[in-house]
Amino acid sequence: MHSKYLLVILTLVLGLWGGRAAAGELPTGIVQGAAAAKHSDAVPGPVPIDSTTCLKCHGKPDIQGVTPRGMTLRLHIPEQEYVRSAHGGFRCVECHVGSQGAKSFDVVPHKLSAEESPTCLNCHQKGFDHVVEDVRASQHYKKVGGKVGCADCHEAHAQPRKMPEDRYEDAVEGDNRPCVACHTNLTRFKTIAGRAVFTQNLSHEFLPEKEKHFRSVRCVECHTPTSAKAVHRILPKEESLKDCTACHTERDSLYVAAVRTYADDAPGAGGFLGRNLFDEADLVKRLAQAGVVLQPDRPLRAREIPEAQALAALADAYAPGLVRQAGMDRRGGLVLAAVLALCLCHGAARMAGRKKGGELRSEYVYPLGVRLLHWLNAVLFLVLVATGLSIRFPEAALSLGMGGSVLVHDAAAVLLVANFAAFLLLELATGDIRQYAPRCRGLSERLARQLRYYLWDIFRGGPKPYPITREQRFNPLQQLTYVIVFWIGIPVLALTGAPLLVSGLAPETSRAWLAALHYAAALFYMAFLILHVYLSTTGDKPSSLLRGMITGRHEHVEERPAAQNTLES
Image 1 (spheres, rainbow, N blue to C red):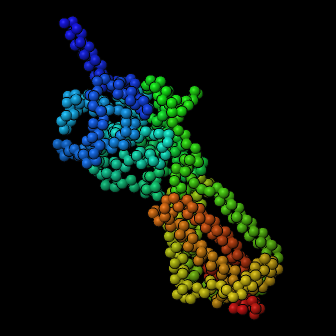
Image 2: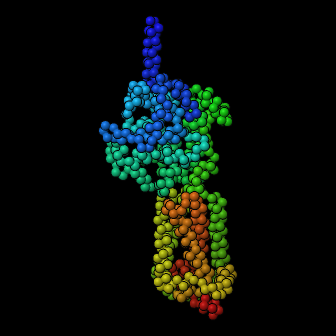
Image 3: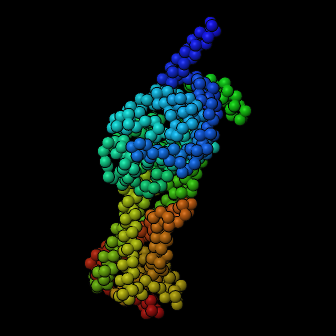
């Protein structure tokens, strides 16, 4: 008889202890990852049903449930995602508690007890005080309060573990999925926020290449404080990061820092060691068997990725300002400096030996259409140079800012191609296209004669071998240069720039070398612009050629070339 009373008392004590645990006390022996299996033995009295039994139904993609109010329930649990998830070692019944024990799961729908089922904080309260503080300080909590819970952002059945072998970009889509699910779904957003927003589509108008950013950068990198790892403290959009140079720079890039250390604080191998959350002995033993050496002077970091590998995580995609060829930058800078120095030295020598000319005469040489297209072309090239350098070197002191530069650069590029097409049509319609075509016969002799003038005769005040006339505005060296600039350079710029402007025109892995070729072509045009501006000062007066492209009238000192020096010879 006494034994029966003792059995009843013992049963009541155990029941009260289990109720306290379900009400909010943290059970001992909980560990995610490799030691998650211990949790099964620590939770008192779970129904002896294995997860494989549940997945026989819930693992089917076509399983559905509808509430009495007509709302569709998401009942499908992808088995592979569940097994690999942070909760993969748990049994379903440890979180989904039946109101009638094992019999609760014999009927459909199952009879679950909301009061007895544990919440996230039953396990995650200890050591997560900072998370609770961040959530309460977040914009989500301020706007909608308790309507947004843990499960709205963290998929309990497929919350991935950040494993050391994982690649950063593979985890981005999963991390961003809950953000996109709310912020692109009008119905769900209205359900949570209590108001309808008809433009809730992740607009990010200021952001170039939006889809690439969504695939490569976690939302929380920009929408939480960058000074601390407070990923649960969602900021108002006015305070979110909009500075492109925070990531697109080779110095202290936020993106590189995120990729390098993304698994450090995650519940991976050893991520919770030293935090007094559970008995570490079993996990330390498992890590030792796996060959993981624990550092005695600091907590084990799940992974720190070398910077080179972090950049390689871009999968050879082009990230302006972040991935660039330092060798090409140095060589390009040296070439431009050499061209500028050559022009300055040549100009100084030319001014020193310059002779006073006679009376200037002028004649109408440059048609209005050519002049208008020329100056529009010059403005577009200067805009492209300024914005292009700002995109490639966003951290530079004279940078115009990456966000605006990308938009202006793209627009200027389209206008440049349109301007070149208009120029080509005009020249073909008027027959003026012949001005830019050098005759092959005797070309080498004419080039040698023009080069001799630039390298020798110009310093002595000698006559031009090919004076500018209405019938022939360009000397043979200019004609050959325009063949390269117009018929080779512009197509290269357009063909390499178009895939960078429009996604899908070329494979993603080709963008890096396309960007390098585009930059090389841009360096060539910058060198050409320096030479072009300098040669515009080689008229009979330093400003004669420049004024001619404004007024259309070419100013020159009367001189008549020898018969053998004409282009027709």
